[in-house]
Image (cartoon, rainbow, N blue to C red; front, top):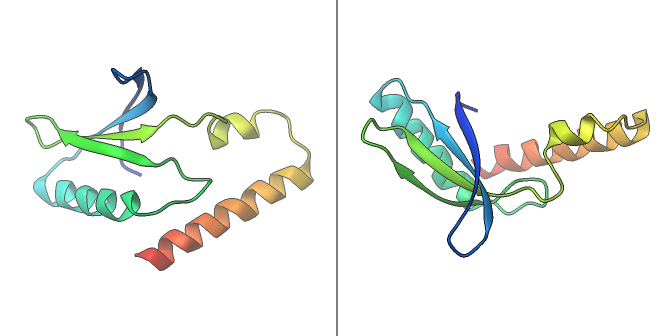
Amino acid sequence: GKTGTIYSGNLTNGTRVIVHKVLCENQFEFLEITSQIDHLSAVLHRNLARIIGFCMDTGHNPFVVYEYPVNGSLEDRLRLGLDWCKRVNIVAEVAGLLALLQYEN
């Protein structure tokens, strides 16, 4: 949810990953982000990329490492020119995931 830069890469074992460098403007934002990372790393859901790990640079900007979404992102799916029935199904699945995340926190 925070701004930053998204990178795609490969680990030494060949696993493809997404790395999000999260920009934190102050220590409060950093603590908030690390708390969110802690909560999200415990959530397993088929529509949520799993957090593999994270680290920090010297400026308290965390790098969050996610599993690579093999089926593409939500944005990729919506660009496919889906009919409204499929779009409504996607919205329902996203709403279910958001409800799960709200319940978990």
